[in-house]
Length: 182
Image (cartoon, rainbow, N blue to C red; front, side, top):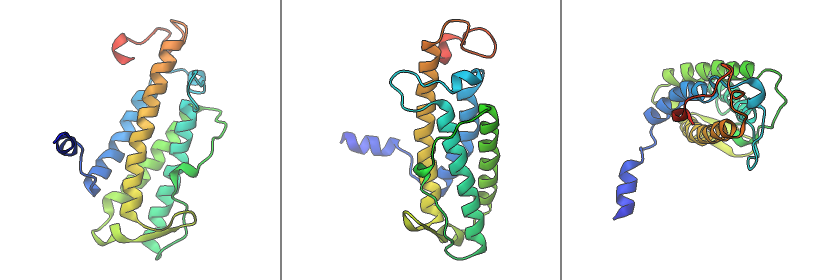
């Protein structure tokens, strides 16, 4: 009985759901990093294995691969493209906001391609060296699910950073954010 209620509350993972999730991620990521100083974005709070920059860098790398893979899949049959989003490594980032901008630009490219996909295009395949043949539908739905996971991680990191940093030193604005944002 309870599981029936839970199932009704969870959105059905459709192409439209994926597109909405991917679109929403643009503002959601901006909101999570808004006002934080660049050095805070590179800090790893106690109990966390990643920094905000690690997540943003992973998002950027995987989004660039997605944009390239989608474009290639529309040009040729079953191209060889890495789409396993967790396979991307941490990188040192000089300017976290440049990395964020690169992610946002790559996401806009992906969204432009996804919005133009026809019904049959969703069934086109990409051959991933690690995961084998996968449809664009599978890849895009996975990307949307991964976005939600990454967004939760960014939110948890933001809260940890804001609660562990000295007052007045948390944001670019020189003052703490209101309690409602923590």
